[in-house]
Length: 280
Image (cartoon, rainbow, N blue to C red):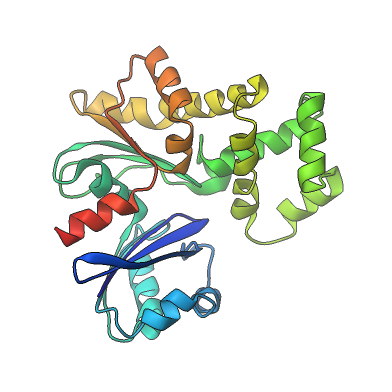
């Protein structure tokens, strides 16, 4: 049995494959080592019955995880997983590598991630090229779900949000200024908290104010990530991967068209393509 994992900072998606078919699939909290210590990772692995029941059967694991760009981060996470999956040979790459495989397979291309976080790279058909992106939810992540959540809360606190949306936010999340500031500045897992408002964007996707926030996020992503990368690789196809890109691909394509950017593909859940890549 093999396992394929694709993990952003918020959620990790798992697929277990044996006898030419998917035998189980599940999700856990994201594995990003910047946000999770060893005991935290063990805690949510030990709460997942699918993984517990199959841990000793899994012989190979291909994991693509946000926050594992460096060899040291990859090795640290590998050592943690080896203690749970005791019979597995484990290979770990960052989520950008997984996204590139999902979007391009063996071909070259420009790959943008828009999920809980944001990133972009030129993929030469073998590996993503080194870049200065991937700075995380505090310094960057423009257009991601945690970025959208941050802008939504900022507008709420500055009383710039329309009354109908304000009422919905207050009703759904029981929000007020003290609780928001305490949650952001005094508690852990801020990026997950910010991303938790993504459902609100989905539920209110046709509201003009929500569309405006989404479009502005995509504008920033294109200016910050895609345009500089395309300038260096002008003839390459452009691909997007991730939940935000997939959910709001109509808005993403509209914004891209304004900048004369053609999008070749948008993959909402890359784990399907990654599994196909490693089992065929």
